[in-house]
Each structure stands twice: as structure tokens, then as C-alpha cells.
Length: 75
Image 1: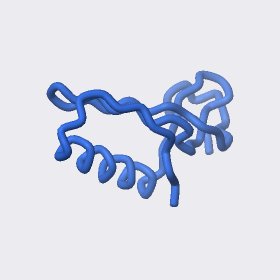
Image 2: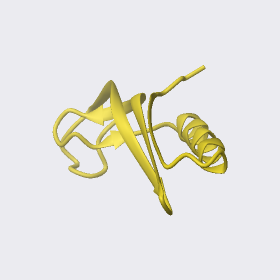
Image 3: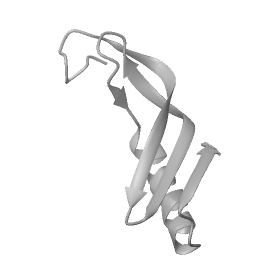
Image 4: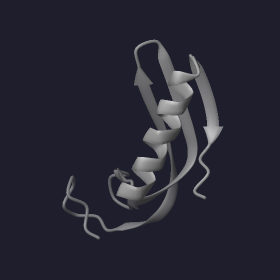
């Protein structure tokens, strides 16, 4: 896919770190699969992966987590 940000790069599959914050909670997900632009580094996370990230974040926030760092589990 062509990068919509820089318009010059092509994306390739890779792993990124995603940080989500809400109120006093900060959640960091490492090793998240994404398409990454080879030119500018912009990362594009698939809709299904985003949904899993948001579900995991919602569960953690409801449990009262303030800071958490975890590897993303794609399963």
C-alpha cells in the first residue's frame, strides 16, 4: 500500500508500539502488527487489530490499571 501521509513510501508488514491513554490510565502495547511506511515510518494498524487493542484497553481500565506495558496478543 502507498503511504497516505508522505505519498512517497510503500508500506511493509512490521511491528510497532501503541500507547493508549484515558484519564489517569496509560497502556502500552508492544509488538503490534502494522503496515509501516518505509519512507516516513507512519504505521497503519488493521481494523481488527485496533478492535482487539481497544477491547484489551477497556478491560484493563475497568480493572483499575493505571500503567501497564504488555506484548500484544494477536490471538
